[in-house]
Amino acid sequence: MAEDGYRDESRDNDIVGGFTESFAHTFIQGPVDGVRDIVNTCANKAVIPKVQLVKEPEKHNVGSGAWQAQRVGQAAGLVSMFIVIGNLLTKRRIF
Image (cartoon, rainbow, N blue to C red; front, top):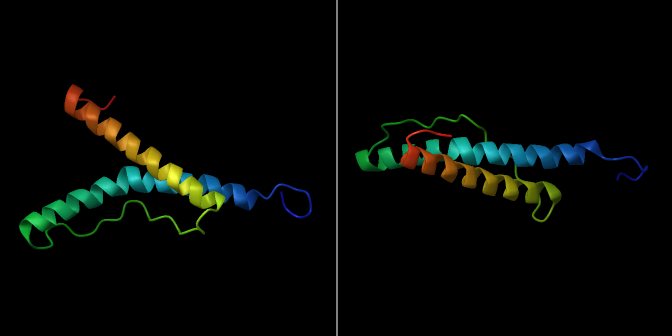
């Protein structure tokens, strides 16, 4: 709550935004960067340029609600990515 007794919606937006941005960055941008790094390392030159599909979330103070939401979003994105990859490898389909 804010000092005037009303709910501080900007704080809520930081938490929700931190979660969704971190989830999207980990779930989408992480694998794109990983494939790019592997191909460029194997080729020993920059074959694939840096492509940014999802912007990196802004940094928050350690221990704040938005920071914790980012950590949870990263974990959820990582777990989701492993589930999708696991399903692709075992069932040959995403879901």
